[in-house]
Length: 249
Image 1 (tube, helix red, strand yellow):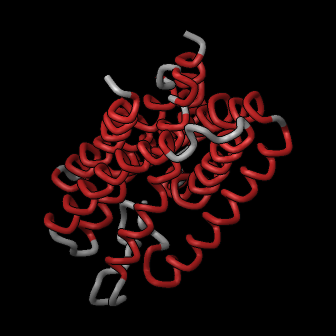
Image 2 (spheres, rainbow, N blue to C red):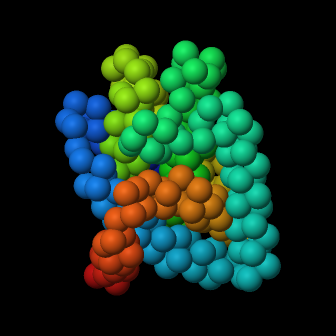
Image 3 (spheres, helix red, strand yellow):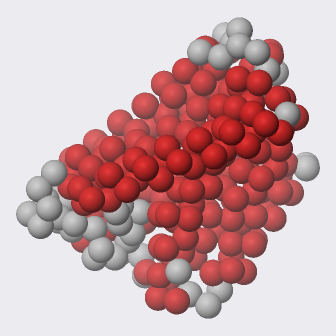
């Protein structure tokens, strides 16, 4: 199979977990503590992927300077975009409780939430395509980490959307669209960097890692601590070790 098609397929697979999570979160009333625990596990998985797959891989590809510059750029870009979207009603887009703004409370918040979901999903998908550069195989750990973490993201966010009064057409249309865009982002990650010097894909990988790490702290960890879950740290560590074990299997 051509590598561009592989990039699209793996990106779509990872993005489809958002739809799966949204389906469960919207149709099934899951206790907040359970959602918080699932989000903690997903946070641990992504933390491991950022540490051992993205930042470490970027350093091996291009060295320390492109890695540091890329990671800081990703963090700054994500934080800036997230602050702009938060002011327009997307601050609590990953929360499962009643924190999300409804369209009646904040006109335009639906669009802001959609853009926020896109902001969260694109960096994860791009690194799937980047991992195919050089004729290699896709990073199974990266795909698994993105897939596993996307389930709780979709679940928690869709539950919050339901509470804020958003209908199924909006919810499933949003996450289905993000899944398709994830496939496109994966293709862009592969196709746009095919002939670039090693330092460029390294910087892009680090950029995605910085954005994902910032996203975890800004949007996932707050939901993981919903109701002061006393097992949050332990569950996060289990997710971290699960991804770490997968990367060394």
